[in-house]
Length: 191
Image (cartoon, rainbow, N blue to C red; front, top):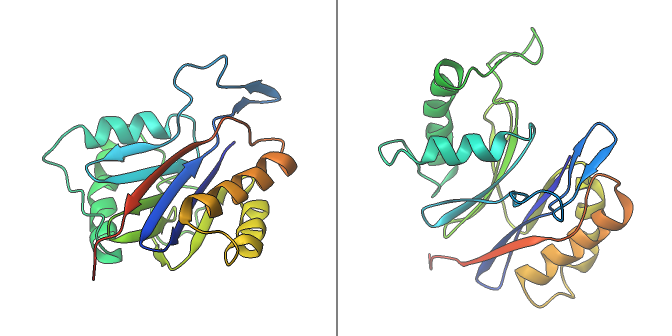
């Protein structure tokens, strides 16, 4: 399980993640797992997936091919990027795209937060794309993180402080969120 966060404030965006992995009831902390970082850099954007533990490896592998679509500048660009990705995930990575037979589309089987110079975004399993104005969180500790960020947003001086407040709450209250945290901060493009 995991908690990932994106925040936006005062011309900066921040993306953050905890580092704990769980295999059943076994906690796999960063002291045991060398590749515990859940953030994936793609050009000038950062992605933070939730879902299967292989999500980071999949994203690293997929975006290693420079010819693949990678537009993280708008909801439309992100949508097109993940539509292109879906077919390759099924064919080359053996993704099982069905969560529920009633789903209208194949599932990505993960949620992904994105921080880019264009803003902060969320990708949902059926490829709905949201652009967030302040903050958002996915994962097992998301409810705690969202509450803490809502409470701290006005008092925090910057995006990084808001993200730290969210992760601290999730780490304190969710048994699937653990230290250390990884944070990356990006300057927003001027509109």
